[in-house]
Amino acid sequence: MIKRLLYTMAITTLVGLFFSFEAKAQCGDELTDICHAELGDTRFIRDFPVQHSESDQSSSPRVTSYEVTLNAGTTYRILTCNDQTKPGKVIVSLYRGDQLIATNFDMDSGRFFPYVEYPVSASGRYRLTFTFKDGEEGCAVGILAAVED
Amino acid sequence: MINKIVSSLILITGILGLFFVSCAPERREEATDLLTDTMIAEDMEMTDENVGEMISGVPNPVEMSVLLQRSDVVYSQDLLNPDGNINNYNTNFKRALNLGVYGTDLVYMNIYDRTVTTLSYLRNVQELADDLRIGQFFDYETLNRLSESSRNVDSVLYITNRGFDNMTRYLIDQGRSSIAVLIAYGTWIESLYIAANIRTMPPNKERIHQRIGEQKIVLDNILLLLNNYRNDPNFNDLFNDLMDLKEEFDKVSISYVYEEPETKVVDGNLVVVDKSRSEVNINQEIVDGIADQVNYIRNKIID
Image (cartoon, rainbow over all chains, first blue to last red; front, top):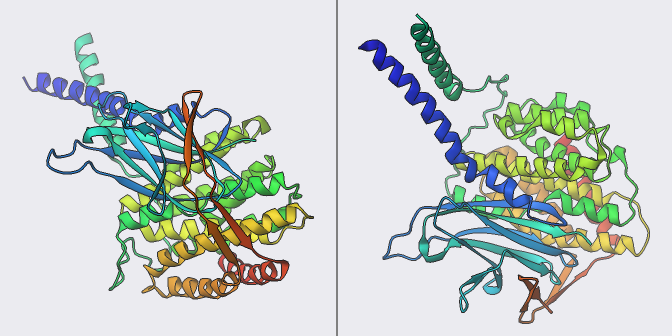
């Protein structure tokens, strides 16, 4: 009886370990690696992992913000990748102050662009915001890269 | 009999598995200072989340190094923090700052394909990261292997940058954002130091001066971050030195003309057309003043 119990516990532990690694494999460094491979001819600058649980129906979807400094004369690419095991699709928006420069989601057509490219002509502090469409649970990564000349 | 052996093996494996998942990494010798993991100033206004949002505004040293290389600036090992200086860093404060400094040096060397000399700097970054209990984010073995070939420079830079980003996020999640701020500051000051001390000719010189002048934008951010921890005398010292640097940067003027951006779709992706522009007014005299103060700050950090 005790032997059977210990045996079951050992198996459960091994299985649990395996599936915990599997669950992490999508969301986190592996997702960044997968996304990085899609960057094309660019130089990686920074990654922005984002993970949100499903938003309450009564409240606005959660938004995560990051400041970035962008330099005039450089063309930046902002690429996003979603963890396919979760329903949420990430919307990334670039702001200069309160002015929206660009977003990867076209509200009129409901279309997502794989990346946004921005040839900067005014150096300064900008802001990247990340949220999941309709407040769904999601895990994603945004990558900021400089396009090679 | 066989069933018994198999059952025992599975049991032992399960227990060992638990052990390796749960045991903490071996700790290096603790630093002598009292830099606690949670430093809360009495009137602190920025939360760790605020710090996390702002710290990404400190530029990655890749951009400055790439600018220098493309401006035909000759590589200079003499500009870098000597690898032997690591023996001087016996406080968490110094270790965090110089983790940033060596991180920038590593990026600079890789951009210039100096793969042979990166080994000791890789070791320094690993050692300092281990001392600060964030070494798990720095993949020394892979970086060492990749650094042997100049064809792997992009991979080396990617792994290095991601490692530093992960360190920063971990520190902020753990309530150790003061360490993250010191690393970011060390990264930035070393990048600025290298740019301010290179020798080059026009028109490349003007391009680099422009980029130096643009650091005025970043400096305000860093002052806000440092201000958060000024209850600590070491941070207060850094803050005061940076205020002296601000006096030099106040001579730089940056003007902006903003226009509404437009967007177009190219090959299924969104491309921004932005007619806004910025202009940086800076001259050699201002650059020399900035360089003098940056040199003073940086040499104090690495000493």
